[in-house]
Image 1: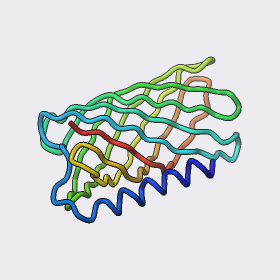
Image 2 (image 1 turned 90 degrees about the vertical axis):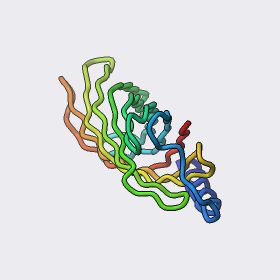
Image 3 (image 1 turned 180 degrees about the horizontal axis):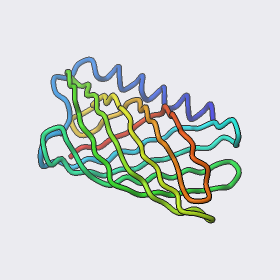
Image 4 (image 1 turned 30 degrees about the vertical axis):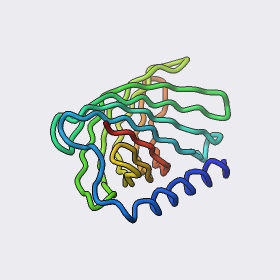
Length: 166
């Protein structure tokens, strides 16, 4: 757990150092596509530690606004795995040099071994564009999970994001 956390912070530090000398941000204008992967560790008071991986793909229908699909996979140390899929939207509301901040949201639906599960998610990223097509940065996300035969709960997660924008 500490190793993954240290690697995420090392990548963020390296990306920030590389961002000092760049005049432009990435390809976040109409007609481009984006793909991002977000990784973070979770700790629950009532369960074991877990990791979560979100992968999304989207198309920029307007400058700074993209729509697409997100997958969400949880894998806990108690050997439970949940996979979810749903639509997402992302809006880049600020840019300066190689930095860009975005808010995002998604609605997720998935199956577990015992029930149907859903989630509503919203968050924010600060992308450091290493080159116009590649970004790295911190990821903050809030998700409310609910489902049939499954207790509702909220999750606040902080992690790292890697993005490709073409």
